[in-house]
Image 1 (cartoon, rainbow, N blue to C red):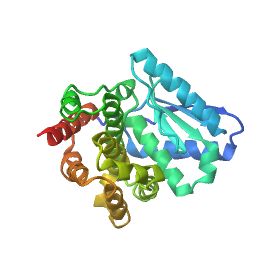
Image 2 (cartoon, rainbow, N blue to C red):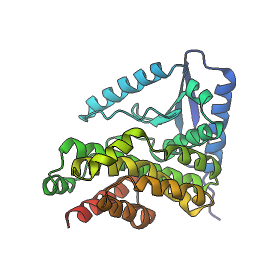
Image 3 (cartoon, rainbow, N blue to C red):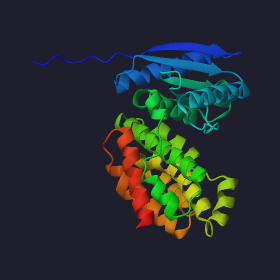
Length: 287
């Protein structure tokens, strides 16, 4: 009889900056421990950084992100700062960063969804290699064929690759029964900003704007796709459709192929999944 491989919860190294309430620290660590016991994927060590002040947290993320990018010859793309918790692996191991002020101000169920989402990244994407992803060579074909600005192409690639990672995390969470908190999180993340509405008006006549808008729209949409096959579908599908309605007609066709044909079939590793998505997009746009 084969011996079962035991997967132990990781050790969590905690540091806090400022006046972080003990009750919040206890809630965050207990939530993470419950997650790691349920999901049971290998993860030896996790760093947990709790910040009282958002500006201090943002300064930390900017400093460490720029250091990591410079070390590996990347251009730093600012990490999304609207969340109450974030994940990175810039130090060489998974790191979850939490802002206590934002957690207190936001709906508790959304905050729970965010924290579990970042914990999902720690087990699936807890290595620096998932933050050192360079655009595949085929992207150059799209840049030349569509006269696409190179920086726009690279930022769009970053958004799409992040969307793939978010899709993988949501799929993992749904498979482990975390549906309600993820429904709350994605209903929140699919809200449309004034900037996106403004960009939508400019995208019809400008491919650079259209391609960037497609990528930035698809980032949260891709993360929600595994929930569309659950009881969350009735709430999230109208939000997905509203997001897609911002795109020019041609981009809507591409977006629907991404969420209905391409990413639901992805079963490879993260880097392979990203490569396959980019290849499909380039072939669609240049054929």
